[in-house]
Length: 271
Picture 1: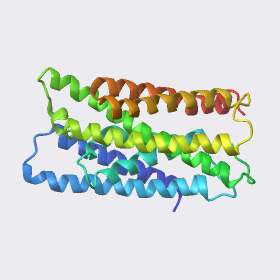
Picture 2 (picture 1 turned 90 degrees about the horizontal axis):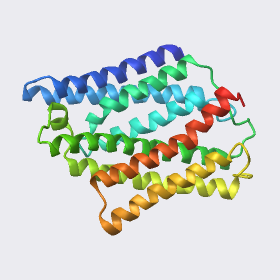
Picture 3 (picture 1 turned 180 degrees about the horizontal axis):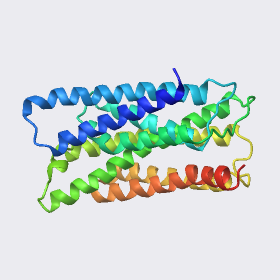
């Protein structure tokens, strides 16, 4: 099947699933319709994820070397976030987060389709380098999902404090469920980020080379922020606004570390 057709089909599935989520959240639907609508929503999302997997295999993994440019990296990050969300939805009622995540994933698919692939690893790249890249992408993606949850938690907390929970807020999972899932994602993402940094320091040549120093320093700083948050949660029970602030701060630093450096190197400096 043509890659363009697969990409458009993925876009339709993701946007269609997000539309159904929005319809269920904001429309006054009969209670008996909700389970069937949830099934259709998840079905479309899983179809989109399957097609997205196919696209990524063709654009990244079906070559002699791992081809991971700026927009394909964005698309891979989005795929990981969607996969984590759908996996979590099997045990927790968190699929409504797809209202934000699925359209963003669709945008990355469209960008990956519209712009040419830019590879930064040659065909002789070692398996260690590929492992480092994979660990980094998984860590960034899971921490992205945690940050989306932090934003929704902030909205949820704002409305609950003012005793004005609208339809959207009422449709979200309970505050404690959202917060618990956020910390689960941060914990897993922190472990993956630790492994990514260790693999970089242990096996890659000169992590503080001129073109990597800003990425390395910012990644370590983000690691310290997320580590401090997990430590504060364990020792002092941090939660609520404090946890949200730390999560979003760590995420902002991480975005600058990876996508900021790739944007400058590939699209501005064209390296």
